[in-house]
Image 1: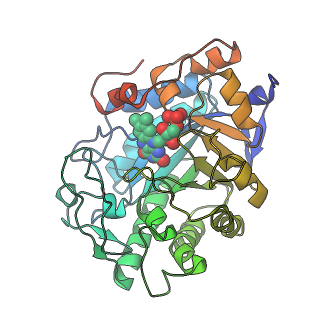
Image 2: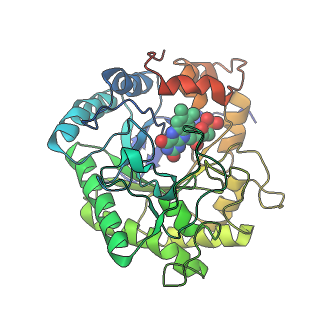
Length: 356
Ligand SMILES: Cc1cc2nc3c(=O)[nH]c(=O)nc-3n(C[C@H](O)[C@H](O)[C@H](O)COP(=O)(O)O)c2cc1C
């Protein structure tokens, strides 16, 4: 190992990335009632571009004013004021030599009715995670199983938010299909027990993701990136494998490869872990099933793990390491010995303590 692929340029569609390192999406829960993040949260994103990454993902932005929100303090990109707040941030990120990608999601059954204007929780099926909500210590709310009207309304929210991102100048849009949130809930047999055209077979469980991708794709100009994030784990019931087998996962990746998307982003807890009882990790299984550009995230904390993760991917993303260490890109470049950060240390992201 020890090659320099990490610091070589990469062409992601019409964007030339200066290296293979990006900031993963990180929720900060800093927004007030206006749905706009705190200034220091904006400044953090700009600073990481300044610190040398090539891609900056936003926190996951919620897609509507009905039922999308899963945590307090999340932001939206649906009003002119919200767009105007993000515009200078995007411009500064670009001026620092990185690209800005807006990540958006609907929380589905992970949503809190209290923080949603419609006071409602919706999901593919009326079942909750078995775990309690770690933030409130109470059980998750039994969601309404989504009607056809709900499905169309939710897709419209993704489209409107994507339009907001385009108007704010973002270079790309990421559809969050990972971590057991709404799109992931449709994909997984663990949370999708529907008997209509959105449930049952793999094709049917994929249909909602397909409709979201297609609707967003036609709403955004061709010069913007469209990416999709996927994982085999969810935030609640974390130990559950969301796909039943490697072949089921790889079939989803093949479906995604047929879409007009520009990259697949895979989130893991630890990129090096072998998956589905095979001798391959998630990146290797994904690479086997697609030729699309591939981003990998999870447990990448030093030069050795970064090089190893990049062996089968095109870009690595960091969350915890880059959250806590403004010099992470430099340190990786210098092959400095670094420690893996624990999740508890990352909880600073949810406080109003300014980050380094
Ligand atoms: C504070 C924090 C907030 C996060 N918020 C999001 C998010 O909004 N969207 C998302 O896709 N992943 C989110 N994640 C997951 C990370 O993007 C990443 O997939 C995960 O932390 C594994 O990478 P790491 O080992 O580099 O931390 C978050 C992680 C942390 C630590």
